[in-house]
Length: 68
Image 1 (cartoon, one colour):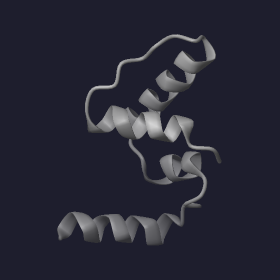
Image 2 (tube, rainbow, N blue to C red; image 1 turned 180 degrees about the vertical axis):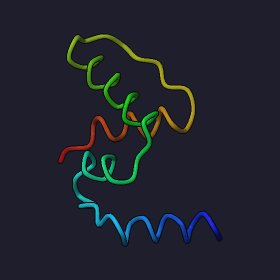
Image 3 (cartoon, rainbow, N blue to C red; image 1 turned 120 degrees about the vertical axis):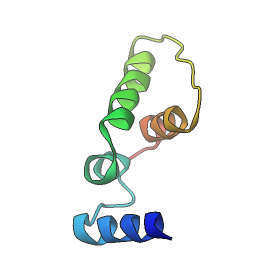
């Protein structure tokens, strides 16, 4: 319940645009997710496969491919 409350307070305070994944990442995400999102975008740019392993990399991959 404390985690849910912290997330709700963060959303209320930072007011991210939920339809814009980069804005959500900017206002609510951590450096780990931001860096991995860049890795996935770079992999797509250079047509290199990137291996996902775990929740954080899954969130980063979804952030990278979600249209804004």
